Length: 318
Ligand SMILES: Nc1ncnc2c1ncn2[C@@H]1O[C@H](COP(=O)(O)OP(=O)(O)OP(=O)(O)O)[C@@H](O)[C@H]1O
Ligand SMILES: CC(C)(CO)[C@@H](O)C(=O)NCCC(=O)O
Image (cartoon, rainbow, N blue to C red; front, side, top):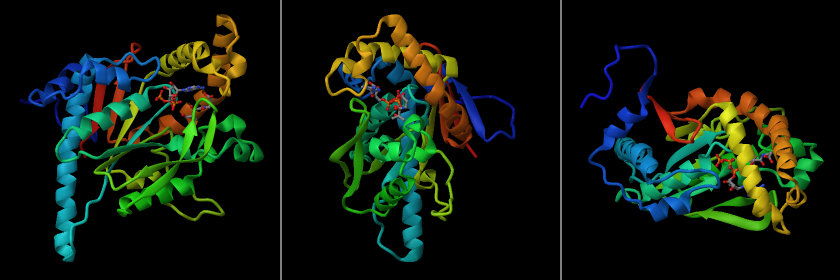
């Protein structure tokens, strides 16, 4: 089947609408159930089995083809170098704004990729774990810059990824808790030589930031075999952020350990105002200045409509 009949163009991308994209994997089985999708869904994300079928089934098929092709390339390198072929984890980055639904995308992908016989061991890590702890952010005057490039320990993240790629038996990462709004003291996520590692975060496609102290020009994305940018109109994402804030106020914010405990008793109107002001002061400028400019570097862009469903898929083919 010819998926697209556009005249040859110089664009490095192929742009497919939802219907064309979803027809690209008709013979691939859908391994998930309604219950699986309900378990993977993030707060406020209405993703259902039909969406997984239309959008993620083709994506998991494409990724399975890429994983197989990449492992063939590694074998070619090993043959040339007369070395044993070791297993190198295939690393997938998932980027996008706060509240766009990256974590749901990453969790669904993890689950689907793990159902392929070639990649049973799929691990997921979020770059939130590499944010500096609040005490350090406060010391650096960065408490209102959480999520901005300077709020992450980028060197630790690069060290983590290079060890995973080098095939270390166990690699450890710190853990962030949205409830306490801070790094969890002493907690670690451990990655043990997975077949695939999914790395989700706002910052995963950002370029290297050489500074006086850090001459390194390595970027996080240098460790990626594939990257996905989850995209939507900024005004829709802002609405999703506000809606989620309202939902959290009724649930998580009411818990005694919540950093946002003081927001639990706000009226609807006050909560909407508070959410909008956090969005406008922190997450919107970060999106505009640091996240959106990285979209063009992704291998694949998923564009969502106002109801969160993916309407367009853009794949880099050159
Ligand atoms: N202040 C909070 N208190 C408790 N839980 C939160 C809070 N903020 C976010 N969460 C929960 O953590 C999950 C992940 O939030 P996170 O901010 O990483 O997502 P995100 O960056 O907005 O990206 P996405 O929505 O794209 O996954 C959310 O789905 C939400 O349920
Ligand atoms: C932790 C991040 C940066 C990314 O997940 C984000 O959820 C966040 O906390 N942003 C700061 C502003 C806010 O509280 O929404």
